[in-house]
Image 1 (cartoon, each protein chain N blue to C red):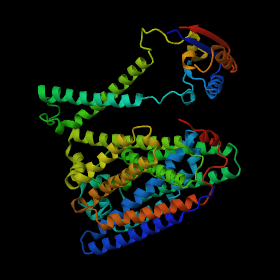
Image 2 (cartoon, chains in turn green, yellow):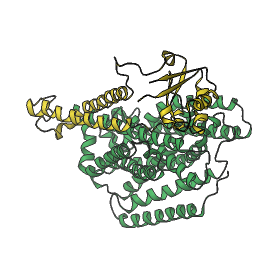
Image 3 (cartoon, each protein chain N blue to C red):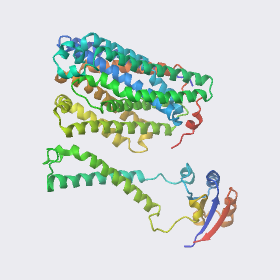
Image 4 (cartoon, rainbow over the protein chains, first blue to last red):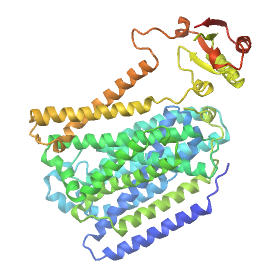
Length: 395
Length: 177
């Protein structure tokens, strides 16, 4: 069945983009005079570029994981996953744009290690400058984004080819490429989060940071997948998707929420326990300036899925899944917001028109791109070797 | 009360499933199925209720959580305040983070053990309990459907027997209990 973007959805994305632009405009007008305006604007650009790019990336990871493990059940929703990965080229564009702006402004007070003035007076940054310098940063960034793009392109091409030709040859190519992607991703997910997010708090480091960011990325991607699947199902598309598929997606949301909470806690507890000055500074800054948001976000992301998605019925209930999904998705946005803002802005950060406006604007673009991707092809794979297994999926 | 039981034995789980479907479609109530392994999808066919083991797991988990919290507060804060690495040792809340891993482990321990024991009791398979299965071969490579005359009063014993024989069974046994 071909997907046609409903008028309602078109109106929604248009409204989101318009509200986003209006709010951003108001935000810019209100804070134009502030001394930290440019810093705040660029921090917002980084937050939203990373957040929405990472959702597409999380979906790509999920797709590669399914290829590498030869997963059968997800075949009926494969095109939904691929549609979400369709944001990757746009996400790459936004990431490159904001990172270019940041590099050209010597870090824009966000990546302070890009500023030669700061580095000259800072022994700690100087010691790290073999890794944290503009040239090497860009080499790494280009490699990450290039590799992600190549894999995305390949998966997409083979998916279309599979619909046309069928057979198992493409399946086994996907199997190999999926496994290869996981190898790259296992390294890049960590190092890219160090480069793009952790280097904002340049004096501080945590070896868990990459996994923690990745768990949040994965969870956000699963939430988007489950909401999108429910939306399409409600409109009568995806007739092959039954309660068991929804249940499995619900389980993934549940499990990745726990993975995220577990890693958040592991990082927090170890640093709290050791109580070493240069490590606790990261949390001191967050507790001093974002106490309510930081712990509130953790409690929401941990307790909401745990209590509301624990039972079997809840994971099959469209209403509960959607509400919990939207809430934890926005909480993961807050997570990224604090990751960036606490280091970049410190005490002067606050959520105002600009933050909300840019997030809504990006959400509008994100939804528009995904729906446009869905409309490009069939919603159920035609020749996927595991399609039959997926149609009879029952748990 | 005397009851008549029919045991129909099969040598394949798919045949048993089709047989059970056939019997249920004729209006026969299947009391129980014995199998060496779980047969996927048999529950809805013979009308087994959704298990409530998950709810019990949650309750056992809550008990574990409470026990761990109360216990550690008493051991480490009230009875003998422990100074570990100079952490605050006078209030539970301020020291809560150090107790989280143990609380978590104990919650899992209680939930898992409680669930396993409940499962054994519900199935009457605690060590030392008398085996419930009609034939030891159902723990190896045979599958058995159990029908009770008292639950199928619509049918006479002979009718029930002929219905069962329509399915692809390999052996049939009848007993008075």
